[in-house]
Amino acid sequence: MSRSLFLAAYDIRDPSRLRRALKAVRCFASGGQKSAHECWLDPSDTRELLDSMRDLMDADEDSFVLISLDTRRGVVALGCGLQPADPDFFYFG
Image (cartoon, rainbow, N blue to C red; front, side):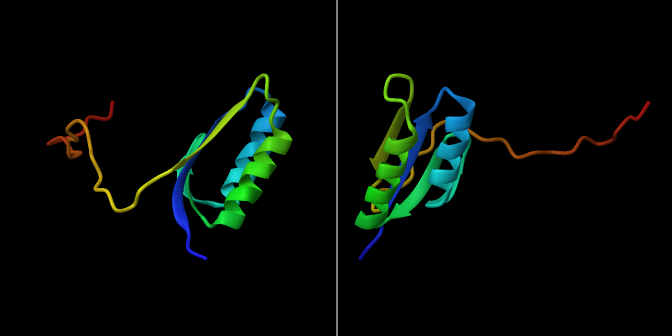
């Protein structure tokens, strides 16, 4: 089975459910931070992740989204990053 790239993101209000959601998503995540993670999933993994999140979420308070990403498209970056630079000297005083 081939795997596809997904973005899994959630907003869980209760701290104990939040910890369980993080644990559930990290089982499949290849990277991410806070409550958004990249996941390479096959159809079986997708169903397992959705079932896990459905079981632990409170539908009235929490939200979860699993977005399929097209890896054939190029990356679009907005803004201009600056290279970090050290000053000529440091003052400790």
